[in-house]
Image (tube, rainbow, N blue to C red; front, side):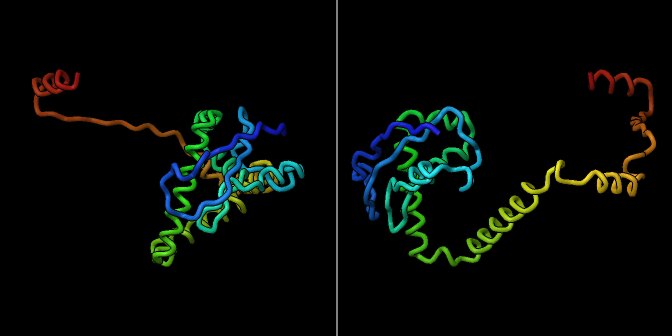
Length: 188
């Protein structure tokens, strides 16, 4: 992967007008035109990419936002939206949104919202969805199912695949032919 030029973002985070603890800002602009939608796996990364992705862009309220975090959030968007972040000012705005989110998240945790039953339930639902996606949807593809299993299911569920042809008909009955003409005129 070609290393993009280094762009200093967030000239001064004081411009944000945020009161959270923010330290250190530097960012290597992610290489754009075609980025994968899924974050690269650790095995796919070169040592240089790992080092670059680990660079801290911002430290805010005890949390570090890295180049990899920014790239992953940008890559999770549609290609149309990703293209806009080639502009350094839009990329800066995107990182500022991430900073605002971290500040709000820290404030919510500080006020105890992390223990709210609705938040706990949502966290559990997200964990279940991720597990299903990783264990079943990504691992279980048509190519991973043995042909013998497909044949056995097809043969064992014959009625599901061989149904007689059906026709559906509708009928509207009216009292007189004048009513029928009026109804046809109304519908046309």
